[in-house]
Length: 250
Image (cartoon, rainbow, N blue to C red; front, side, top):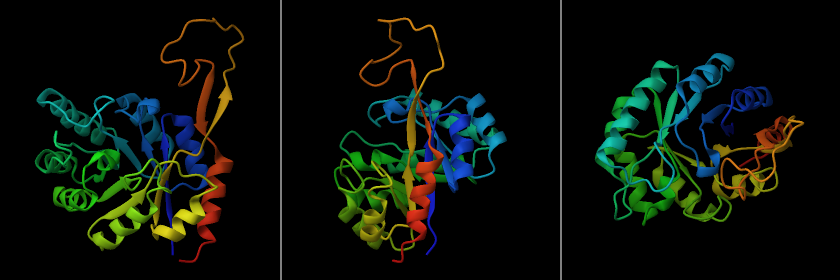
C-alpha cells in the first residue's frame, strides 16, 4: 500500500525541506499558531515557484470559529480565485452553521469556485456536533478530502472515529488524519485507521540569528512563541515518518 504525507508549512524554506524529505504534498498557511489562515499571494507564488509537489492553500479569512458572515465569504471567494491564479493545486477550507453542522450550500459554492483545484474540508469538521452527519454533508459539498483528528484532541485519540469514517466513506471521499501526528505515533495510527494520507507539521524550533535582542517587547502572545525562535520543517523528522509508513503492511 502506498502512503502520502502532507506537510503543513508557512514558508518557502519549509516547502523546499518538505519536498526534499519526500513529502507528497504541502498545505500552505500563515499564522499556524492560530490554526492557519490564508497566506499572502506573494508566499503562494514563491512556494509554487520553488517546489514541484502539489501545493494546497488554506482559505480561512481569520482565526476563531468557522461561522462566516457575507463579507468574510466574499473574501474567501476572492482568495480562492487569487490562489488559483498563483498556481495552487488545491484549497483547504470549510464553513459551519451556528448549530455545529456543515454549511453545505456555501461550502459547495467555494468548491465550485475552486474547480478544477482539489478541495479539502479542514478540521472545522472536528468542530461539528455529529461526525457521521458531517461526513455525509461534506461529501454533498463536492469536497475531495476531509482532514480530521476524529473529533478528538489528537488523531491518535480519535483513531477509532477516523477508522469508522473511512469505512463509512467508502470510495466517496478521502479521509486524512491530522493532529498531533509524529514519528512516535504514526505506526500505531496507520495500523489502527488504515488511512493512506497523513497530515502533520514535522517541525523543529531553532534560535534566531539576531545578535541584538530587545527584551520585554512581544509582537504576539509570548506564551506561544518568542520573536527570537523560528519553527521550520525538519527533514530528518519527515524522512523518519515516511520510512515508518513505508515499512507498514496493512
